[in-house]
Length: 222
Image (cartoon, rainbow, N blue to C red; front, side, top):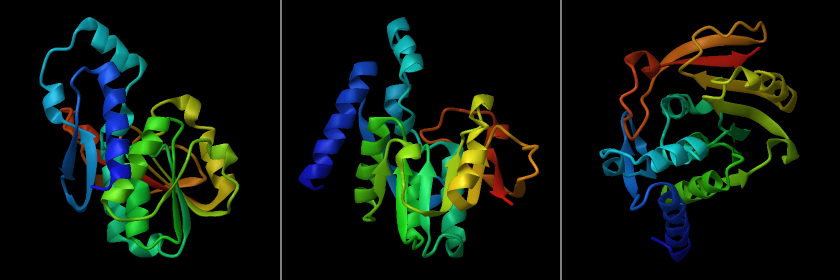
């Protein structure tokens, strides 16, 4: 591993350990997605009882980037199966977390791929994982500060909070095409987004989510 990557990994682990003492990142293969590997939270860190203080810190500052969420994994799989959807395009992955969707876009031949997440640790994780998979991506924190033109905007698991629904209009205002993957929203009742597929994906490390959350709806702007 390059020195810069080692430094990023150490920084991310230090941040994790402020929430979960002794937490580590593990180089992880992903179910159903052998083309991509990620640095994710070591599953061994989840196999013990948490002190109440740790539980509260997890709730206050959840390290979303330390997991590959099912909708992101499903969307990344779909992108690699349909590279023509991103090839040559300028794309942005909103709420990128581990960076898996931005990485998949880069592997599929995107002209440029931006991993956008408010969390500085997620930005670091996206960069670390991009280096691991030997692709070039850009990282950004503030979606509204990204001023370069976009052909395609992608987002996974952003509809868990109805307060985020206005983002769907913002997405369409910024890119000529939008793809939204979500395991919680089965029927998005909006005339400007159409369900185009039902995908399969599970969160990794495995959180034992109900089977229904392994079915991911994919919506496209129209």
